[in-house]
Length: 221
Image 1 (cartoon, rainbow, N blue to C red):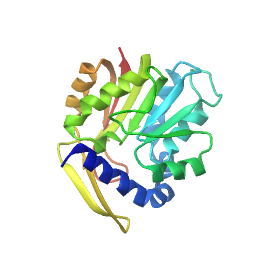
Image 2: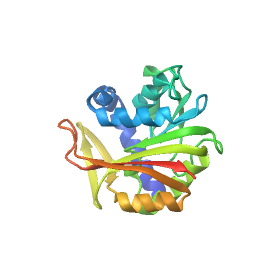
Image 3: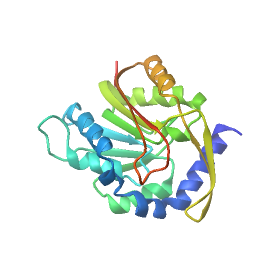
């Protein structure tokens, strides 16, 4: 099946579950101390005054967290944060809940952003909807929209399997979740023009799906 068809299925699936997803996960960071620590480290190393991107932002709760935290070691002023997602349904829930975040509709393979627009970017569990063959293009796009020296934080499920859902919280969907090998993703980051700064793995928290998770922090070389 062509990539554009699969991406359309992902978009429609997230449109379908957008309200339920937001209701269940809008405060998920409260139960993820390691994620909060990594986001704080990213913010501290981001040039003050630069915009941040949340790639595959869903309803925008991570983008809103970044916007309220500020950048730089001492900064506490709100930062301009841009959430980008394929699902207009997700973006609409985000616009209603987080008016301080700018939301844009777009694909990870062709980001609606200018060259060097962002001082840092995060992609937390959004690359799981990309196949292994699509990762190089997505990483090249992430590099394109980052300033030189900008940081990218990735999070994804570890493995080589693909899990498919045709039912999610009582809704009919058609969506694949691709697991990725951290070593391979690190190699692809280096090939795309990043220098990997940190690699971390953790087990799932009690309230999460039973998977191992990887985090990679990379700087645009």
